[in-house]
Amino acid sequence: MNAAETGAWALLIQLAASTLRVSTPLVLAALGGLASERSGVINIALEGMMLVGALAAAIVTHSTASPWLGVGAGMAAGALLALLYGLCVIRLRSDQIVAGTAINLLAAGIAPFVCKVLYGATGQTPSIGIENRFQSGPTWMAFALVLAVAAWLRWTPSGLWVRFAGEHPEALSTAGIRVNRVRWAGVVLSGVLSGLGGAALSIQLSSAFSRNMTAGRGFMALAALIFGKWRPVPTALACLLFGFADAIQIRLQGVVLWGSEPVPVQFIQILPYVVTVLVLAGLVGQARAPRALGQFFDRG
Image (cartoon, rainbow, N blue to C red; front, side, top):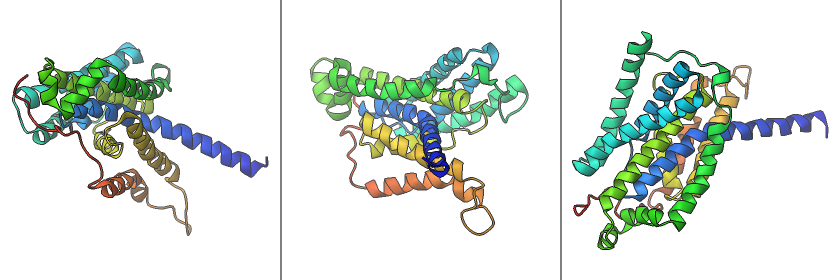
């Protein structure tokens, strides 16, 4: 193998590793969205849950020098925001799209306020040393969870309840299972997983929390969920596709593709979002959502 072939293989390996790393928050948030939406609750609040998870994880990791405590804090913060969302859409029967948008705006406002109170700056938290950050732990967790969620939905009674809550809630209620309790569990689980995705963003892929650092990843996770037709493994593969596009744009920044000037960085940075739009445009009318998605249920 000559030097050129060796360099090409090294580049491919680096690109694959980068794809796995940048896909991690997407996979976790998409699994959270799957738990909520398979139970019948639309959840566009994934962006906000990721954001508060990233903030809490960065604050606790910086304070304790323990990324594991940071992960726990991120999951707890996501769960708390999910409880608020569940209160709005399950208990109070608010419009799920409007409530999800409100949760995202609330999270976007809370983050700089907390940073200002704790650190005197609204932009970001202090930097976390590399010895106190994860290198690959959340990535292994994310793809293990894909298999675990797939097995859970297919082979366990509680997984069956979640599927029926989103497809045939009347049949589930007839069997004596409280539909809204199942939906509460799905929404809270979505917050836990989205908070974990946010934690991966701030203490694995980055060295601190920065304002609006999720940058639309919650919506990309929803796009992956639609692309994967609300199934865990295809959804994870869609996340890998978006992660690959993100890894490509990172590699292309500053690279001269033609002429003597590099491509403007703004054009490179929109690549993952262009891929997301193209994928969704190609799926219009093809993806079938759970039948009872977005429908309220009055009998428990």
